[in-house]
Image: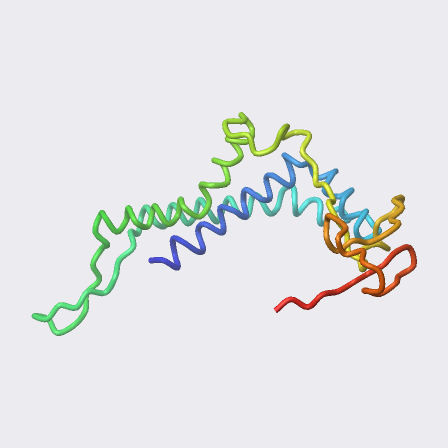
Length: 183
């Protein structure tokens, strides 16, 4: 029961939402632009057709077929019948089906709930949801080469700069680097 309702069906519904969001909410053109920036070439027509049409239709067909199958063939379990000396298939009771429904909904229902909460700003997670951005607070010596167009004069491994005592640490071009072992 857990495998059927909590795992597979919930994941299929999540995959369907992902394909719809990537293709039609975020936009397949923007997604293709992102991939082109990452790997250097634009995805071909096969991938774009798969993301926009083939995957959503296939996943929707799987969801509809699964719901139809569950509606026409309710799940059952083998129950031991002592008088017969064998097991017979019995349908799950109503309360067990309620637990199955809760498992199914618990897997994917947070996605549309959080979307609606953010869309209508019922709960403010950011100062302005549409203008929210990721801000770099601090960097490490290993990521300095990845930051383009910024001049980093010195690396601090503590935000207040109290690691600047003379003689401790490793001098690095443009600043000093100190590593501490904390037990």
